[in-house]
Image (cartoon, rainbow over the protein chains, first blue to last red):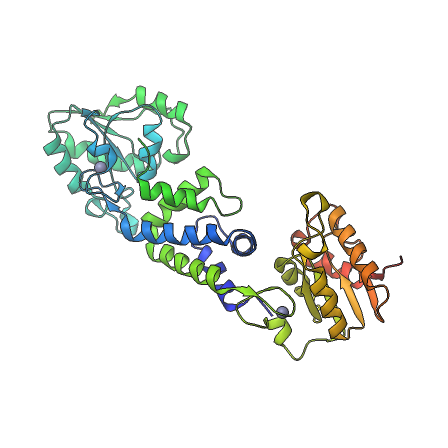
Length: 199
Length: 199
Ligand SMILES: [Zn+2]
Ligand SMILES: [Zn+2]
């Protein structure tokens, strides 16, 4: 004997969430059913609206329900700086350091073994954005992993002929980590200590 | 600058889940949006169906979308035993010990300071179920907490005049814990070592 079909379906569906295993999903399902059904329904509606309504900013490629995200639409930001990151979460990590330039969000990093080349992660769109944007500096803030370093190096080579400085965030960030897990102070130091990439 | 309104709404809604704080909710929201939107939509549908479709078994008061839950509807279970627990999660904990009698699910435990008396937790329905059920034994498997003990003692007093044995699970279960967190082996010992309640 086990949970009823609808409860089992809910437990199974909750496991789509990162870090949620069978036991945690059971506790979540029963707690919602026992203590907060209106909260469960609000979550259902928020999920539907988000999954169906959120696309990508046409300029920086971050998650956005509008044609232009808030970062791109804001006229007060510094148009001379472009910060390139691997994903939407990284935008918020960089934002917390006080950076107020523009962003470009790749779809992760180059990963030849998985068949993810420059086209798959949006490098052509980045190059086009750089050509149209008139930036003085492009800051490569991909993750400080082997793949993130390789991706930054690849992009730096592509941009070498452009009339701008291409920089890489300093290695204040711990090697082998993920950008979104770095504390704001460390990341602020890394950003301040960025250097031009010498090829 | 922060997340877009729909993303913020999703992050806020995810925090209804037990154990999910702001940072975890952010990771969940962005990961669903980036990697598994169909999984997010399945979760939304499962939540809606569960929150709206699941009620309580008319006989044992556990969560069920049918008039009678699977435990009550099964004709092969032992009709001479009734196990009383504090919530639906406990049913599955007890079930894993091999117990195959019937259940009655209270709405938690007596909590006079919160104004939760016998009526609020379903004691009248339990007494009615016992009177109609013809059980040889009622096993009180409320949590081994101060409140759970008090609830068991109160019910034992109510049932003292009935022609049946009222027992309490043995204190193999650690004091101060919650039943659903006890491992199956310990709970099996506690169930096997149950004793009649002497008043
Ligand atoms: Zn944008
Ligand atoms: Zn039932």
